[in-house]
Length: 391
Ligand code: NDP
Ligand code: MG
Image 1 (cartoon, protein in one colour):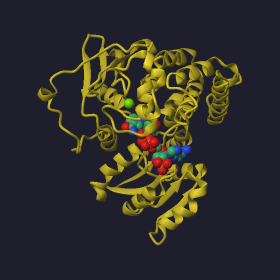
Image 2 (tube, rainbow, N blue to C red):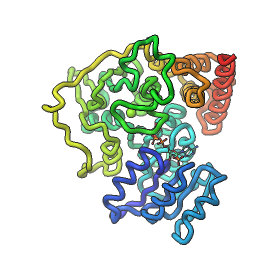
Image 3 (cartoon, helix red, strand yellow):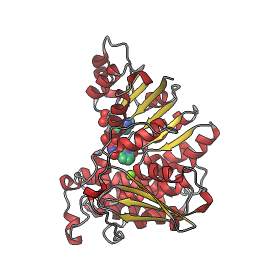
Image 4 (cartoon, helix red, strand yellow):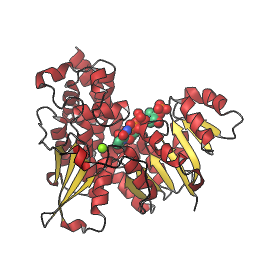
């Protein structure tokens, strides 16, 4: 059966890996919508090759460029945040949510309202509005399948298991670019150094978040939201080889581990074919050649982001929205050269403490409007914290 698919964030790292899988079996898929932002050339090329109905850029100012690139192809062009939500709402059987940042929330919700299967790479939408995402899926008979490698691993380890028998979940972290750096050098880490990952080839933002452990901090929140498990049951383990992605521990002491190559096409392909398992073009691990797996407890002094994530879960309500917005703003600051590497965690901590970051909305009903309002206020508070630090 031909399946209708859309890819939100098609021009990014996850989007391109998704296209790689779809391209291998073009007759199986009817591509509805592809979305991107600045990379018009890639967006147009892929939309034409995959015969998408529509290509959408988030950037209004690039609509003419997109139109020109699609001219004569029969693919429609559109631009802007609203157009992305409209594209996400077009009927499709499977939609990949791979926009980076909180910008992925509204399109993800628009897709869920149409009862689709949403393959969720955009972890920010679970961190900033987990309850709203899950409730929207439930109300509209939609399904969310995790694409983040750790959460795909947990999901796979839980198949056929009794969720009530789960004692703990362990997610692994490579440790990122600065795993073995001396602590005192971290503050001086440069953008170029933070943008290179030892094991994974990913977008720049998540690569930097891996070095600061903010990526893992987000994933702790994501695990709590998606699997309804308490923070004291979630452990983070540094595992430099990035081959065991997560482990689920049960009441009888058993640990079910998911082992696979550091290639996102595994988790993407699992979500694409679920509930079947199909052949995927990923490396087959030669365990004898690998020899050994290492594990370490993460040093919370090196990576304060992990503590901030646990505090965020404990505070509840829309604190996750503040956490995510502050993290995105601090990361923007680091990329722009205004915030030092270790100062990113200080900016997030200060924003979490700042009452103006939520204007008393932390405990309010989680609607999209409220989330966007808190997101806006938290970004403002984080910017103020950055300005103050810059003096
Ligand atoms: P990239 O930066 O590579 O790609 C991001 C995508 O989002 C691009 O298509 C980009 O368009 C688009 N985009 C950027 N800004 C906006 C905006 N304001 N509105 C709409 N679209 C926008 O990111 P990744 O692919 O690395 O990550 C995507 C998501 O998946 C993130 O949430 C990340 O945390 C998550 N993830 C990624 C993993 C990975 O291996 N990369 C692993 C696990 C999770 P353009 O490029 O055209 O500007
Ligand atoms: Mg991950």
